[in-house]
Image (tube, rainbow, N blue to C red; front, side):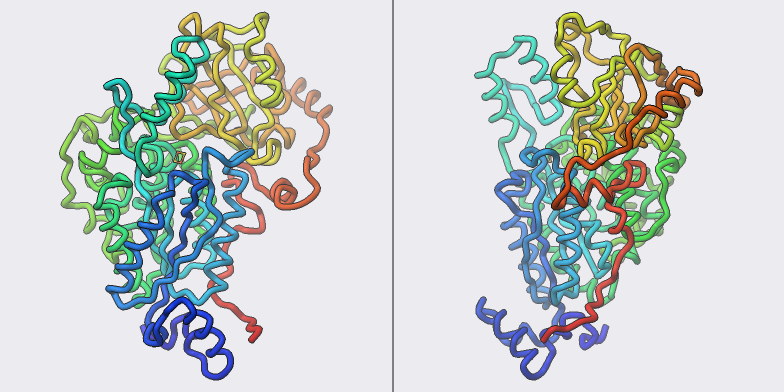
Length: 571
Ligand code: FES
């Protein structure tokens, strides 16, 4: 590429007053003149924040990226964007995914950047950064922060998926509050994101399978020095990508999205993968529908024996060969000619990968579980679809008919779940409404709602649960999620009543309300139209423009991209 064509020359290559202003204020940071000589200017988009503990090591990671950029003859410029800490943000980090993506998009476009490195970690920081970058479409590479080390407690290995078990043990009095405190400290003992195949690790696998990161990115633990090496190498590579003008739209083809879906099935990835991948496809302009997920992933079994679908942790996954070993096993199914950020194909990157432990990364011939992936359900209870992750569900509940116990919203659930005379047994189906994108708003991770204490005490460990919300990628259970249209928009889900019979048949991809069409129509006719609960600020914008889960829950006006051209110039 002719360096006079670089975007950054529109700032730093200027003469006169304009060039003076663009360069002089940068020089106050100690930047010497030769860095303005036409070398690629690379943004390092950093989601470091002490309020996002999973990304708290990103300043060090950014330094490794910078070292690589300098080594390759580039000019690194680190900048912050809104960071989304999954555990602290209220009402839910998902409410802000689209807002953060706007920050990323506008920050990249408005600044003199020729390429960008996205530092992603905790759940929403990956999709928000990738979505924003897609809408600009300059050369981009992703560096994930890596999972934390496996937790240790009383000689046992623990991680985030155990949280749900410990929580129920505390509710039933099996462990006391002091033990709870001690478990917290043992679980989160290093930097990095959740150490199981939760949403953050799912997103790290997604970007690698899409071809947006260097091979091996998905699983190197955050404190492992090899994570910094990968960051350094990514810094070198982004400079080359700018010279090759290798952009996101060159990598994110329809086939790359299909690779990501197959990979997600094989790793047992989070249900959140579906919603984020649909949103990313919407930004880069690749047609992809929710219903296609079944067909694309149907031949792929579960290969990774990782919690919450299996037994092991992300640290084990890395030592067993990580995503490269798994992708090598999948090569016969993948579109192996897809190009990736290092300029090589999936085949070239992974054909020689080695699996060091088949107990952790199994083979197609002897998979961990033939039942895998995220199944998209259809039926009158979810006119536009719903999802379930069967590998994290109970086999005996995958075909089940039961009476609905309906909670109209989270407050109703909290108020009544442990009321002694609640007529519930292990065959009941718990229905939670108004936790969808518009209704909550923000679609929180409450879909794997806790079971009634009186059933826990009887030894019940799972029940069918259905909601228009989401579930943590670390969660498990027979949990139907993302029901679309959500209750707030008046689909059939809105009119389910206590005692209605519901049929879940995962093998036939069915979610059915066993109520006559006439009764459904009558009940729907009495529903009030949706009214936004907020009349100002971002939440109002979100409630009025967010799309339904089956479309990726992006804001309608953010779909697609605006490119990297800045047409107006104030100086
Ligand atoms: Fe950040 Fe799990 S809370 S990855």
